Length: 276
Image (tube, rainbow, N blue to C red):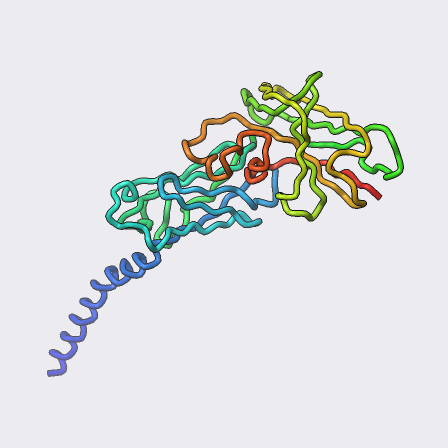
């Protein structure tokens, strides 16, 4: 009898073990609405604000300062929609970095774990490292301007080549002067940024070594009145192949000198102008 009980116990244990993978699959199925990972940026220590977009699924997020992100599918996704079932590209975008992507598989409205770029926990198997295309630096001269002073100040934009063959564009006015400048008081939200008025046109340039754009403005400058520090930065469009629909996430005018451009993730050194 004791031998029979032992054999029965072993059989039940083995049966439980063979069912365990199915149990784990059910756990994965309930958590398959989410995937995660980490993105890094060349020459940066803060990896925040990289745009993470699932093409064809209409879901997106942005990275935290440490580069981590979680991308979640809506629970209401239609499991029977054929266009949502299959392979999808997850794109990682910062405007002056080379676009990167990872491939995932979606089945019945959920990410399929332990397949393609995802491990068994729904995390990217490898970190995504973005390579810088062009370095952008903005300088204001003078950097401190007395409110009672008169005269002019200059804004200089320097673009440094990081990889060969990269073209950029901006908007200039008469005399080849830069016109697409944003001015915002430090600490204010992006929607409070000031845009310069006047006529301007699009100009393309190849970044070879270093190129410089400049703008001279009369004092007191447009967009600056109260004492404090102000950030100044230019519109810079960087040419690279992008999937259809990616830029639409930032607004219909994101590719132009407009407030929509402020939604576009890009890394640059902004100038700081201080009004005592």
